[in-house]
Length: 134
View 1: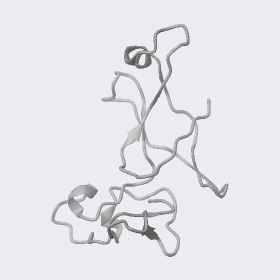
View 2: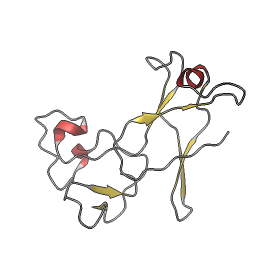
View 3: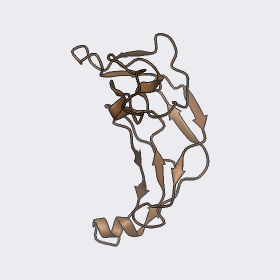
């Protein structure tokens, strides 16, 4: 099955998919009994129809329910300080507004382009930025 999701405000993290058969009560317990695994390549798809295929990052150990699969969001969260980016707190490469690779917990799967980042909304604070792959 092909599935999709979208990001408005990226907080990083990951996701999983689960189903519950139509003949069973729609409860959390039912969904936890039927987790779906990820297979094949992942795709980023932009509103203009551009697509980028890449190998996703999947985790199947330490997940809940046990044996289920979790996928990392391929678009890294951008923080305007090292503390929230996953970098050591002593890192000096990340400064508001969020500039530099130290502001991301990992490298995105696609190039940023020029200019790389813009504010999420006109009145957003300087650190609330996004790019094509951020």
